[in-house]
Image (cartoon, rainbow, N blue to C red; front, side, top):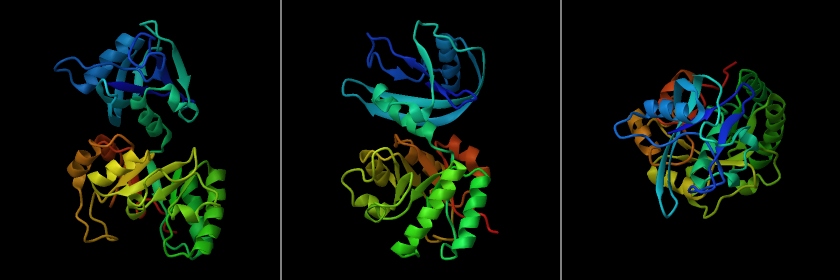
Length: 308
C-alpha cells in the first residue's frame, strides 16, 4: 500500500529509502506491505501511522502498478490521501521531502514508482474538443469558457480540418490554454505537428499500432486511444504517459461499439501500469465512480464541451 499526501501548495510527500534496502538511496512514496488478511484501506492507515505518525481519515484510489525488477515482482496499490490528522515525521529515521510532481526527477525514484509521478501530474478530467472547429470564433470561445470553468487538460480533436486549418487552430488554442493554465494535446499525426506549439500528443489506436518507439519530443505528454488489453499493453511498452480506454458506456458517436461497462473497464485497467482515463458516455458526475474503478479520471466530448 502506498499513500500520496499532498499539501495546499500541491507538493507531495516523499521519503528516501535506506541505502541497505532494495532500490536503496532512491526516493519513494510512503507505505508498506499488507499483513495477511488485511484490507487495503486498513493497511494504508496502519502503515502511514507506523511510518509517519499520522492518522488517515479518507483516501481514494490513484493507480495500481505491477512491476518486475527481475529479482522480485511488486504490486503497488496507490491511494490519494484526502484527509489525515497529525504532522508527518520520519518515525523510522527516513528523510522526508515535499516535492511538486512536475519537479520530481523520475530517475531518482524506483522504476515501479514512476507511473505514480505521471498520475500525480495528470488532471482528473480531459476535455476533448467538440464541434465545430470550422467556426473558429465560436469554437475558440467555447474552449475559452471550458478553460475558465476549470479544464486543465485539453485534447484538440478536429479531424475534419485540413493540415493548414488545424495548424492555425492549434496555435490559437495553445495561446488560450497557456494563458489559462491548461495543457494542450494535439490529436494529429506526429509528423504533422513538428512545428506546432503544444504540451503533448494524442495518438489514435491506428497510429498507436504503427509505432515501434515512443513518438514526440522529450518532456511532452504522449498518450493514445485504446479499446482492449493488447492496445493498453502496446501503450505501456512504448512508454506512453496515459491511455484513454473506451467505450465505457453506449455513445451516439459510436452506436455499434459494444460498451465495456464498469466491470469490463476495471478488469482491463487492472492489467495496465499507466494512468488510464475512462471514455464513452461519461459526464463529470461519473468522476468518482471512474476513480473507484481504477481510472485516472474521465475524458469526454459531449459531457464537457460548452454548447453555447
